[in-house]
Image 1: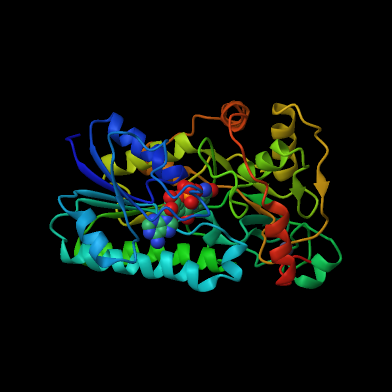
Image 2: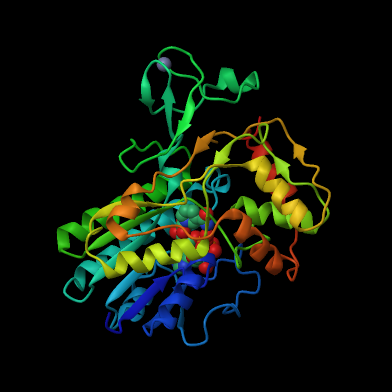
Amino acid sequence: MDKLNVLVTGGAGFIGSHLVDALVERGHRVRVLDALVSQVHATGERPSHLHAEAEFVYGDVCDSDALERALEGVDVLYHEAAEVGVGQSMYEMQRYVRANTFGTSVLLERLAARRGQIRKLLVASSMSIYGEGAYTCPAHGLVYPQLRPTAQLVERRWEVACEQCGAELAPAPTAEDKPLFPTSVYAITKQDQEQLCLVVGRAYGIPAVALRYFNAYGTRQALSNPYTGVCAIFSSRLLNDQPPLVFEDGGQTRDFVHVSDIVRANLLALETDRADYRAVNVGTGRPTSIGEVGRLLAEGLGKNAEQEIVGKYREGDIRHCVADISRARDLLGYEPRVTLEEGVPELLGWVREQKATDAVARATAELETQGLVR
Ligand SMILES: NC(=O)c1ccc[n+]([C@@H]2O[C@H](COP(=O)([O-])OP(=O)(O)OC[C@H]3O[C@@H](n4cnc5c(N)ncnc54)[C@H](O)[C@@H]3O)[C@@H](O)[C@H]2O)c1
Ligand SMILES: [Zn+2]
């Protein structure tokens, strides 16, 4: 592959900065546009983890002029910038819609004006747009349930029941054709980002790919940001000798994907045109319960593995969602490489060197004030 001029929006963040490393290592010229959102970047300065050879442009994706400067000479664009926080998005709605939905529209207007110039647009989408994952019912086969009814959650019955016969459902791999049912403002804006990029990309002949990341973890995930990243949140609690706060009963499952696998999927999607104008899951296909993650992290840090099972639930939370990665395998030749057992020790090696303010109690209190934890 020839040397490209690549712009990574949000490139100072967790996933973006790892992507920048990989692009620089492959010999590409990389520029970063990032607004250094204070919740993620406590110092407000260019983070030390950002590769020294990357050019840094401080600016907001909602700022058309900043984008114009950042897009000068660019062949490929990775759009990773976003406000990231499911719970927070439920009361700071304008902030999420502005940065994610409006910001993407500003970006796309600038790209449309440069349509001959941009060879590829890759946008970070999210598993959150699915809502509940896919399930199977013994009688009805593959089903796509909505959120669990409030009456059921009030009774602390956590598993998902079939909407037709009431039988308990078994989680199934979630494929890209599952109907989308975003259950938070954040998820709605991620759906917007994905669809805006795919639709506008197609209209202007800018090959666009949306990668639906599952639950990312790895070094550099902002530990003090209480709104995102269960591994980071639990680690920050444990570092401060606090037990991880586990909602429901800890039996909910997610697909934890190491940041290096996400980065590799991004490079593969750049190198092929087979995924153009498509959305592709990026996960591992392996379910892990939240309780298990808490135990792995506590044991790894040598802390008491006791967890605080809150027994409460958060509005909009889903029970199970794990990726079907057949499309990524098929179109990208993607195969996840890092298991949680390998990824957690690496994460913790880094965590031990960090100082993290534990803002989880405050964040949970905010949700409770809004009536979003019950
Ligand atoms: N972390 C996950 O588990 C996960 C899962 C699915 C999707 N994603 C998506 O991946 C992308 C990267 O997420 P991350 O986990 O690295 O988060 P992050 O917060 O570490 O990185 C996001 C970066 O975007 C920047 N940013 C935010 N608003 C901006 C704006 N208006 N203009 C310019 N820059 C802005 C932030 O300063 C930050 O550096 C996001 O689009 C996120 O929605 C993340
Ligand atoms: Zn049924």
